[in-house]
Length: 233
Image 1 (spheres, one colour):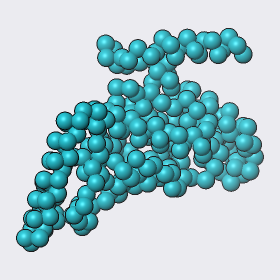
Image 2 (image 1 turned 90 degrees about the vertical axis):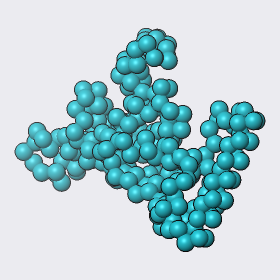
Image 3 (image 1 turned 60 degrees about the vertical axis):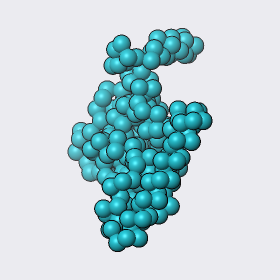
Image 4 (image 1 turned 135 degrees about the horizontal axis):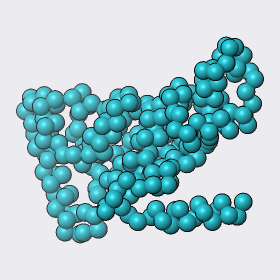
């Protein structure tokens, strides 16, 4: 899996802070931009996130180039509707040597892995046979598996990303999209550390778990660690 943050709004935290201040200021955005220090911007962003006042986070966007993931993952990814997606087309890009994503549980079972490989080889052979017989790639692709590797570019605003991370960084999320979410979060924290300093599953971001009986049980340990950190201040 390869995840790269290829574009983002310059100075994302100053942009959020300026947008928030504009709502309550008689002066214009350009003047506000000049008057806000980095420390003031950071403090305001922390306050906005902690209070759940997230509309101004929609002014900053992050664009990711993602490769080495399966169609299983992208079917889940595009359910996050407040985002834009451009995915490699199986209609126009021939899959004469398609790569596959192998789940760890199958990789750990030698017999299952051998059967997986044999099935992928059979599908590849039939796909090639169809296209060589004149069947259009847009129709031959119907036999391709969910395991087929794909590439996608996606753009999220910061508010949508916080929601994405709260759901997909959770241990209850499917393993592949959870790995993607953690890589995307790491990229975001490099360029907008204040916005995303507490981003992650709700046990991290809010100190609560909504999974009920299906909870992984980490919440109490996280709360205890927070209490210890507060006591040490």
